[in-house]
Amino acid sequence: METLSYLLPQVWFGILALFLFLYVMLDGFDLGVGILSVTAYSEERRSILMTSLSNIWDANETWLVLTGGGLFGAFPLAYATILNALYIPILLMVFGFIFRAVAFEFREQATRKFFWNYAFGAGSFLAALGQGFSLGGVLAGIKVDAAGHFIGGTWDWLTWQSIVVALTLIQGYVLIGSTYLIGLLLRSLGRKEERSPILWTILLFLLSFIGLALVVFPYIIPTEITIYEAAADPSSLVVMIIFIGALIPVMLFYNIYQYVVFRGKITGGTYGE
Image (cartoon, rainbow, N blue to C red; front, side, top):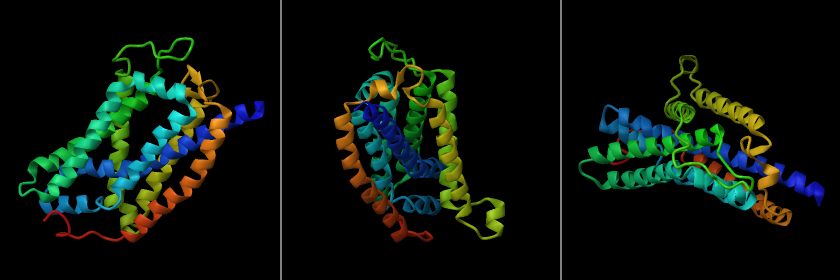
């Protein structure tokens, strides 16, 4: 039992890191595309951008739900503390998700698309900004008492460090969004290797995540709460692993199936015209 109490939190740390990476990689590019859609110089080009997301973006966000659910079940203390400390940026993210989803659907039916075009871009930006502030707030440190409960202020998350992290994350999303769309790196373009840019960008994200995990481990809230202190009962962690072990292959298959079915080029006049 003592070995399980030591090993299971590490396993769940790895599972949550995987979920978070898959979310950032998959939903990150469609947030980036949403931000880039504001810069489209014609309605036809904007429609192409929107069409490239229409059949895949719902599944991408599922990984964020799994990350939140896994954190709640595996590390309930960390879940409660993080939500208390980052209430405002998390609400900002949720509001951005709602705003962009509504704008996406309403734009298709609208005769005048101007407002919904910019609403979709603004919602994507707000969602990315909220995520950046949340990440920056966690990395900067959360004030807790001896029991691990949040004792800081409402605006503790807003620091120059969190602003830098938020802007960097937005830039990363725009980068992976642009490589998903067209792959305009000169070397790859010249060789007609259109998939190379996004593959290299994914590798960059992966290396960044591995580095971040190595720096943070074994803390779930850096320098304050370790994964062992925040972990749920070992029996709960075992039951969750059985459930998640069956769910992960299904989710991965569904994502891969979507991208295979809807692969290929998007042309003008296919959406919102």
